[in-house]
Length: 305
Image (cartoon, rainbow, N blue to C red):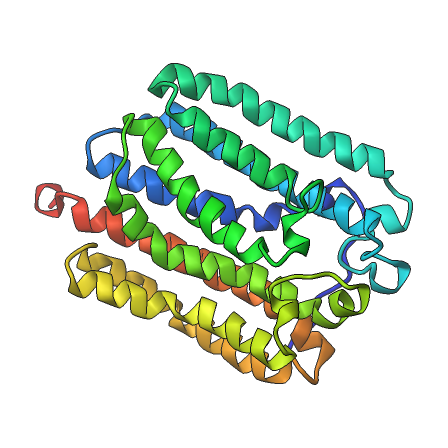
């Protein structure tokens, strides 16, 4: 299997734009439910996506900063985050850029408050604090709360917040539609923690996966990536989501590739490095197909023929 090439130090790698699906898909889910309920505004959705991308970018930057300050990123493992280890950037530059992303998000929040009301302020503040404190300050990633943070903040609050901005209200349907993607999105971070398992353990980093055995970490990774499919099946059978959302089951092929790779990961460094990219790919395909299926399920197809 093709290996993952070492990252090139620079702002592109520091921002990690390939990880932004983690913010985009949850926001598209919230927007899809809002559209079904008769509330949609293209330019507001565009600003929401920009705000979510800025939050995700801030978390990525603070993660680079925090891991370097904690001594986790070293010359020996610089292939993924070489910016600070190699001296291409300074810790202050990365920290200030992360702060700038949060400030820009806060400014967009003023637009959202104007559009939908003060209710969005609480969710917005939770999101900003979640991005800022991931590996800085409270550093909840290092206290076994990273997986739970992703599940709650990105998997559930992002779609709920998107729906709230577009409609001015709440909907349990948003939560239900978001559940399958939320678990799979958490699986991406689980892959990250499993890939870095031995390095984190040696540095005393207390990730959730680090409190398990390595084999247990692999099992958790597989569970989070796979459980989304039975959850979606239950939602379809219960009539909570349209049958068209079964399109997401096309991503089972990606799950098979991920499963085969995970079997080799404990003994193959290349396969271990692929834990995260393969879960990225699976989550992106699953999430987009879920949104497309949801929209098709609520579209007036008869009127389009």
